[in-house]
Length: 449
Image (cartoon, rainbow, N blue to C red):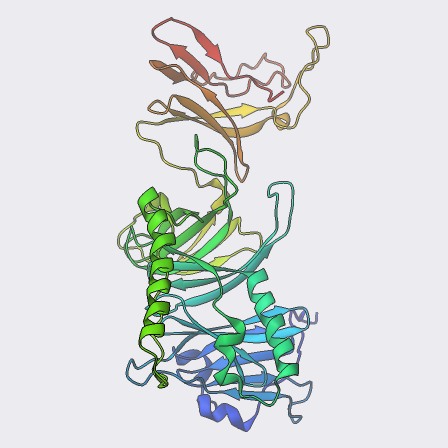
């Protein structure tokens, strides 16, 4: 019986330019830890510490495809090098994003022109992640983003902002084709807005990812700002989760100072130019400063010494994350089941009729079977005076009910099945609430109706 082939050959990237990256030596692609790869449709980008080679593979090993060599201007004083590479594709626009060891985000065209340069945060960029989620029943909006991962820091650029900048760059190319892009990319593209968070509460992270949009904190006033969930892995904590807020304001004073100080400084600078007029232009550009951190609230943390998280891979929807660790194992994490810890909380599993029609009236009795019920988790937070019910395994929070102080959440013990019992007479898991002050005993309804 012929052996089944599970691969389809697409093409080749063999060329003489690859020798600059170490090609020709056995194992050159995997043994060199400084060699970075990024794949796109019909193209691949290979980068070492100082050079990026963009190749278009061909169907024949003898044919030469399109190739571009990019040598970014790096700081020799800081020993800066390329630390991350990723493709950015917007319809007919294809560019290459580079991250450096000094925290700069560089965007290059396929012609090797520098389109954009911006400081994200001082430090080595570990990875550039590009992902998007479409509008569905769980999320009321679509989200496309480019996230920048650094040790203990994560940044998020909105995809629409990057696309708008690239559109403006395209128009500039056609209008001012004779000018050097190196001298005008800052003036034309401007500074891309982004959010920046410090996620180093549980130690420096080796990898991180923004998994998607999450609901706001409980009991918080609803606002137009979004909240994101971030998962980090590292040496001190295998897995950590954070709720990321778009709000950068720390206090009322900080909000006032953020508005007043820049305006005051701008006014003083304008007056200084009027008093001390000088025809000499400073050749040295001012050092860019990173923006302040937005609020990152820790959700949960898993420490399992000597296990150390190494790499993280996120599913397209962001609901699952595969994590490799130092013990040679792969952890599969359900990112939608991350719930905030509550002090002195009590948890019990309960089975409810989720998305099932409840009994219309007492006269129309319906006997449900085990497959009709959905496993849920009830969380009693006595300090908050609430009981939350979450759908398992990847479901959202179904509802929250108030719970009087002094109440306790209980569950009947397991009943051994009787041989005479009917197979269809299934008794689901139930959760009871006992108020010690009033003596009232209540049970969670089996139906959400």
